[in-house]
Length: 554
Image 1: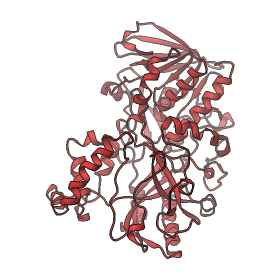
Image 2: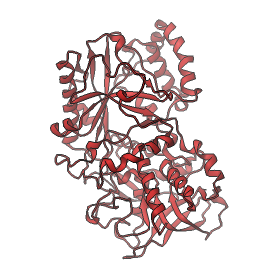
Image 3: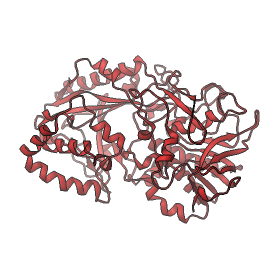
Image 4: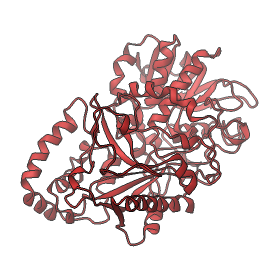
């Protein structure tokens, strides 16, 4: 059932077995799982079923725009959460992420990879991304396993892949949420504080407000904060009436260890194999799920070379630079940079795509389209159908390179750093909550690892006679250090730990010292891996549902 919180009277009190704050992907999955187990659930969403700019503005934060994008591009306050604007990339964390890594301080998870592996199939079902097969060698009907023919896996692998989802959780699960007798979704209701007396083992509930001025109290046997990485942390920081530094700050860790990813392009790969046999685009599995291959590194190589976990994949040339001479790429640039561009891709993806270091003029791009008219004319309707009308939409497009040369995009783990953090400011939002200031920091370890990863790939290609890497920037080290700006995968600020003095929550996501308050968010991640947050956060949602179903207090 969906309830518009504007209909609630001032002073209303909501009750359920479980309250979940945040109706994004994690909150929705947890609510559905608990409802099927017979629990009543209040699912609290600050936004509406559709986009509401007034609700979105509540999440605004202070940050350096050169290091962190605005929250409006990273998060979405509405039913479905950030799944409404994400790119659909589905990839799990790796076994190496859960190993002891002395070269990566503060990186030890409080459980093992084998502990989370059983939940992968369930996540795949929710994401509609097929069986959790992430090695192309295990996908039936694929003749060539490597990105380039004859390239064996060694320290560098080219057989690992990522899958693609078609899911916007707000749309896909809207009917089930509306028809559920056990789940009540209260939208337009913003939680402003968690209530708990000093020294208490249980909370006293939540306070919440609407734009109309109504104040609402929410009580439950168990409360789960699933409002996203930074918004969950902000709610805890604001809950400081009886807890200095906020609820969960017993260790001084609340708001610290803010991690994301490092990504960019510093090199291109020139392969010496037949160009027509390079796998430069998407594969599809027997269910029609789109797959993309990547260069990755074995567990042994990561440890031997002291690498942050890193993945690298082939991409198109910079579409902004008309020197590519490709009419399709020029058409994509003109479309995305036009006023219609915001309807063609999420703002974060659109901006990243048209933010090239070299910007051509519209006339130059139009000239490319005219010179390349037959291919461009054939591409537009075909891609338009696959991208916007097909039941399983293609995630993007790739252009064949006759020279067998492709830019490489790297996506690397951000090393945990206690000085990378978020703190409260005196600035307040419309409902009176203090906003946060984001101070995301990187270290030399982050930059050095990216450079070593490229060197290892280059050596692997040369050793097997399959090609080489060539840097496309004059100073790769300086480029990596200056092209940051990540904030889309918000990890670390309520990190998990075995012991209370080392983190905010225990391995189940329960806040240390409180029996009834849990966090379901990427903010509990100890490290960020080479993966975005979606797959792992849904693993934790299924795991938490299992735990809460078995627990007496739920």
